[in-house]
Image (tube, rainbow, N blue to C red):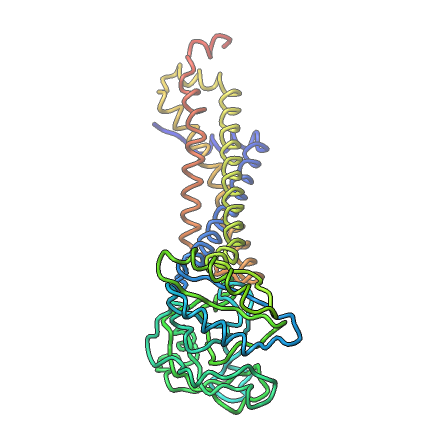
Length: 411
């Protein structure tokens, strides 16, 4: 089989509009495919990150005081006595906001006082000594706060603004003190007015996700030994139960707490998974939309290749018949159209590579998406080559099936 590219290119240039449109479709399809798949992969990786917590056996309860005689600290103490006495409850702890809820506190830490240059953004939770057991996280070094180290609710004075000890996640420890053991080291809270007084790292947690899962630093978490501040007189409790008992105990606790204190109202009781699913909803929805758009574009590109190949067969029946009459085999006819389609697809892919890299650069600069990896570009090109050849296969088979006698009757 002796196929020459020059006649093919000349034939395509004679009717350049169709091949040009198909090449543009292929280029756009490649750019969208590669970047969409890369974004979906990033979102999937983020959604699959371990939380470090016993999500399946935890629920969160929230209440709000409304009466003038409401006593925030006393309410917390009484609620915790009750919660920890319920059969089936492993541990319970107050917390300023539920992890993975999109709400809570954030602060900026450094390893030197008043250092504004080398800082680390950190999720911050106010908890008591039972927090690790209530969350189900694992302490890898050091210790947790003792009960006598838990501070009262801060009242705005300097004495209650600072904390002497903190427990942090391993991710935060490695960021603050790379290649060093962070245990026993000092950290400074640069979001507070009192910067010269350090807090000592007394414990390191293996892993824990903070409030904002969309952030790459969501596993950089700091726990401080303090009863949560009563923003709008709201208090939240993390309650961990024995396996299989969560739903039953959540309903029981919700009913009992609603009746225990007439100066407050119970806002809600929710399983921990509720917050995780709500925080992940945006990433899931984006992934679904990108997948749908990508599939539709691939379908449009396939239809474009199929339509171009079908059109070329229909207008070249005499040419095909003549070649068949001169001894061309069916395989020669199929190969001609497949190679011709490969040329059109390749031109589109070359343009699509440049477009893909450009879009990837914009996404990286504007939205912080990691730079597009060459592996995704290579896989996208291979996918579109295969799809293009498959789309051209049926028209090429039809061309090869044209009878030489029928095609040359008018010659």
